[in-house]
Image (cartoon, rainbow, N blue to C red; front, side, top):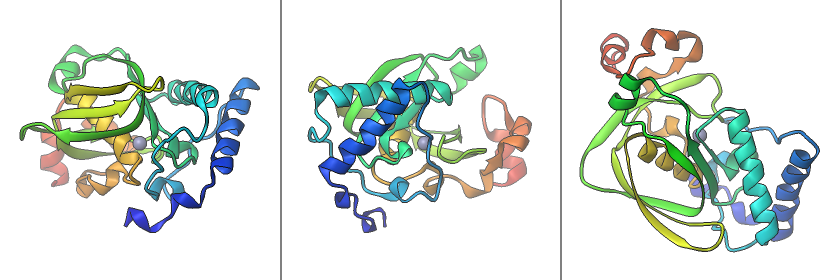
Length: 218
Ligand code: ZN
């Protein structure tokens, strides 16, 4: 399904042009907008990053993506969320979290890093189910069951191949962003009966999902 739209219709020149427009906007004091559900790039199989932007522009683009992520605010941003079909993502989760929420969701601080061509595989069979949201699906949250432990593999912007173990919320963030690069959004994996407008989410804003599951019926 996600393969039906060809990201390879984007020439390298076009990718450079788009990335440079984001960096220029950032330098001029604005930020590129985050595209929303329905934008075709969100459904494309992202292009493997093979150096199309060149090292300098890549570094600048990642800095701009980090600024957009902070501004949103969010804990991750994938290049397709700016309309750029490249397998690039930035991740960072240093927000203060309530102690009970942090323990229930296994939400540990995640230092900033950029992932080029990330992939992941589940480790073991442990899963976790929590509400999550997406900056490209404004105003909603839904429960997604995901592997709780993964091995994540990616290349750093400097070209170093990295293999890391992630658990809990960090694993969720890594999966969510990597999924973006394959044209997948969390709603594709969500329990649809849990889909919740932010204006109603206060009813379910607690560490776990048990009460929401019982009352909403998912
Ligand atoms: Zn997202």
